[in-house]
Length: 106
Image 1 (cartoon, one colour):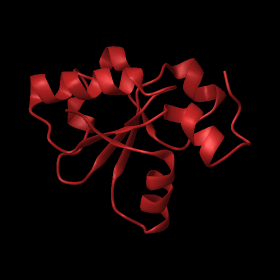
Image 2 (cartoon, helix red, strand yellow):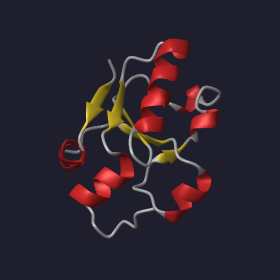
Image 3 (tube, helix red, strand yellow):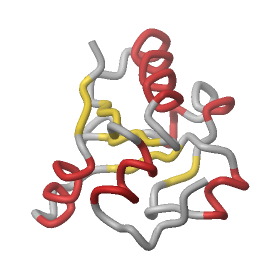
Image 4 (tube, one colour):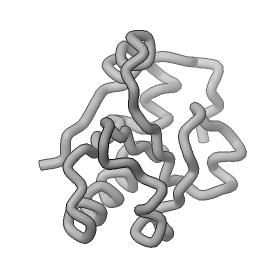
């Protein structure tokens, strides 16, 4: 079962200064349109880019709504044995509605 974190819980994690990595698995054009500062690793490349994803700290994985990030997490867990991945519930849309209404929706 994939671990997940709400936008509010992620904001609390940020506010507390908890060390983590944020990975954004959307496409480049989506990232350019709006992002919250994650490292862009599109879903299609995530298995080939696992060397960019840390294993020693929590890694929050995000997309537009939470579906692609859940897929990325499953692929990384099955293929590369990751145990530290957390899905951002609702993705950037959840972040925009709960935390930062200035983020454009698409």
